[in-house]
Length: 222
Image (cartoon, rainbow, N blue to C red; front, side):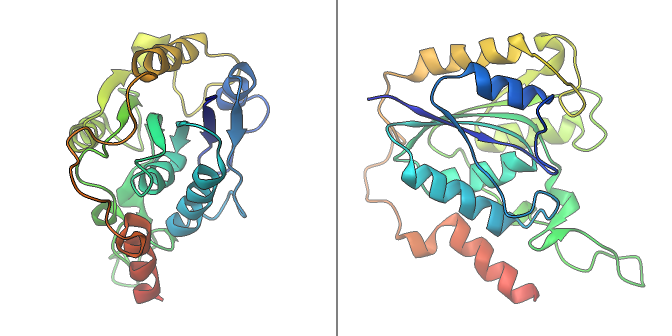
């Protein structure tokens, strides 16, 4: 059965000159996940869009995500581990900058008005293969933080310097090294069964999934 590759851009989307748009055109079977508002990073809304795209997809699902899209994609995919074969997470956004309702703002006392989404993200490996590409000079998510998230998610950490020494947040145009990395991951995992090989129980009811937890938190902060 043919696979579906979901392309999940980050904050402000991916214009035609963006490397993610180029990658989308290079990968057969790719589909972009659209958001209602690319400038409003509300994690529950974004993850809900990704989750619906996974449900509609034909065959095994692969994900290529960037920036804030990485957080939404991983959250959604963790509720659909029986459908997702792997995810390439490129320059994930720093979860500490976002609350459940969007970018964190400060109150009059200088403190954040709402807690970050860090505690609402998966803290353990999701049950499918993930690669995390980080830039060693990323001012948003520093390398030490990227390494910590990669360890929690069981991701193989790849420095962008190994893929042409570019900054994924600013790079425009073709990025053949990233395309090759995705194809290597896809080739290595395509014949494995979906889901965690260690699972011996039925998945938790969907209302108790990661996205449901996030939505409850979002309502609590309103």
